[in-house]
Amino acid sequence: MLKRCNKCGALVKVLKNCNCENCKISCCGNFLEDITPNSVDASFEKHVPEYEIDGENIKVKVNHVMEDDHYIMWISYVYDNKEQIVYFASNDEPVATFKYVKGAIIYSYCNKHSLWSKEVM
Image 1: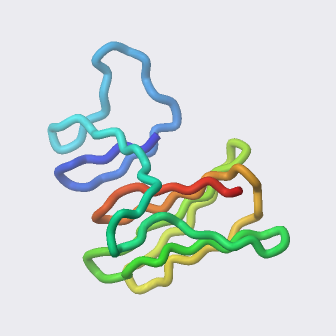
Image 2 (image 1 turned 90 degrees about the vertical axis):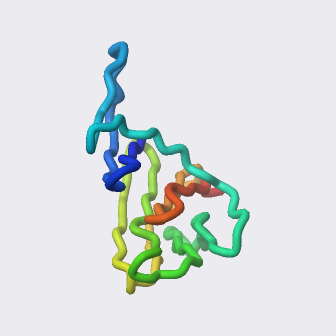
């Protein structure tokens, strides 16, 4: 689970959520917002990760602008209780290679438009 501060943009990955009543993580004096991944691009800017299977590997890319104030910050690949993350700077190309695992989930995070996902078939 990913949470974000709406004031400063800080991201927190929650490995195990608390079950206590009214127990929440806060930042900048506010509770962090849960982030739910989007999976359908409805605008000119693309955010949903695309992939290509190449033998035992999978090449993941996001066809997105990479500008100083608007870019893909990272791509995450989740499978079998494992996660691999590749981080990007604004001048990088958002492309990563991982081991092909059917059913894995690919996430991409845009600094302006939040979290996006796609399942590997």
